[in-house]
Length: 226
Image 1 (tube, one colour):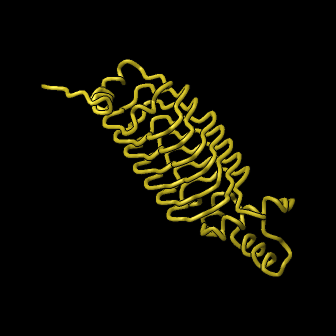
Image 2 (cartoon, helix red, strand yellow; image 1 turned 90 degrees about the horizontal axis):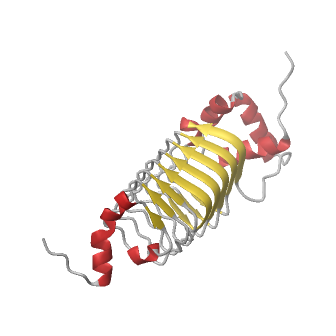
């Protein structure tokens, strides 16, 4: 059988994931690589034969289940490009000054995840559980949240222009001073959201607008009686 080859770039990315806390056995199973191969690459790196990338970057990979358990990870200046994250755990992950580009995250646990001052471009969050997530001061371009549970998420000062929220639960989410021109809400739960006046320029389906009544009344100083 012909020996399977791996590019230096691919090996660097795998080792960056190991150093970020991923288990060798989990990565080996998901990427169909023997654990011994990864250990050999790691020994080679420690001897100076395989340099580290300038920053942690995950690229051109499909990670599923336990192979992508980033729970509790703290990262800065990271990059996720051309990646599929399926049934992964990113809960309580803390990331700053980083980005996602051409990323699809589906069926994943994002509870308590915080991405501050980050950039999201061509990203889809699909069927994710994302209670109490934070995206303060982040920028979103061509990004879609679809069938996600996102109660009490914090989008303060985020650039959400053109973002689509489809069939999402956004109860108690915070949008204070967010930029919302061209944002679109379709079949979403919008009860008790904060910063409702920042939704200026957004499009909301008529059936979703009922959830905004009390928030808008409160922002305008209107008292609604039973």
